[in-house]
Image (cartoon, rainbow, N blue to C red; front, side, top):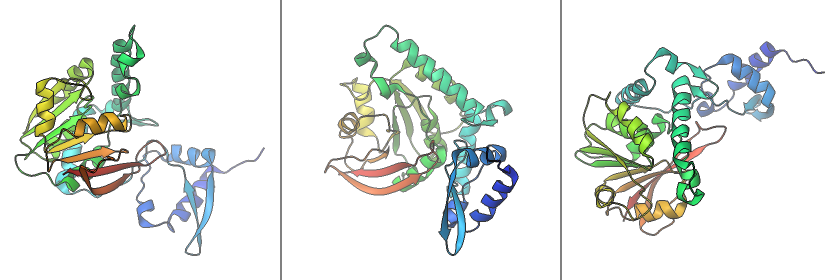
Amino acid sequence: MMMIDLSAAASAASAAAEHLPSFLQAITVTDEEQFQIRAIGIAFSAVTVGGGTAAYFLRPKNTEMKFVLSDSEAAAVSLVNGIYDASEEDKRMTERGSIGRTRRQLEADRIAEEFAEGKDPREVRGKTITYSEVDLNFLAVLLRAAEPKQGETFVDLGSGLGRAVLGAAALYPSFRKCTGIEYLQGRTDLAKTYVSRFRSSPAIELMTDDFALPTSAKTDQAIQQADVLFAYSPRFSGKELLSTVEKAKSGARILTVDRKLASDGFELIKTLEDPSGDLNRYRGYVFRRL
């Protein structure tokens, strides 16, 4: 059996990292011991960078890529994170993220399971009710690229527990209104408990509806009048997403994750990388409705 000195391996990795490009050096590890174990347990490959040897590791789940945020953006992200992870216990980091994040995932999954019980899978809509949370740092840079203007409106399609809605409201208090449209009533009800802790502008509305189907007049109106539409869309089908955002007015900006809009009715403004997923990289897109 081959014996490995964890301390020596970690030291070698740290030394090698000095030869990495600066954007790779920006990766921060929130749990050094977990990094050492994973770095060796997952394995690594050595490559030559500028005459030196650098070790590239699969990134643990609880690491983040540092986005460059303005002071106001960082303050807004911190505010919303504090609403969702309110206690010191909630803030404590684990392999899967914060304790609070894990608790929200379990509760959101429980709501989905209760809704699905006894129903035809086609009625349940399968993966589109799977809960996931967007990195608010990533949302900040996506919104920045969309250049929101004073008095505009924001709509989150599939708003879950409301994090992106609160994130948009905190990042851009100049929004006239921020709206979330969520398929499951239980999640909307839970989201309202977080929104109640937000003591600032703009107005926030949370609605329960299936935005991908013929919807209520109120939901259609929210989509048609939105200036900025966001869809954390890895779980949505391209067809249902496109049919929804095609309702948007000319000039509206549509922010998607891992879904390009395959239509001549949209202009791609910007593509952004978010490497903070589970050992993969999400890609964000900012489109303008023509």
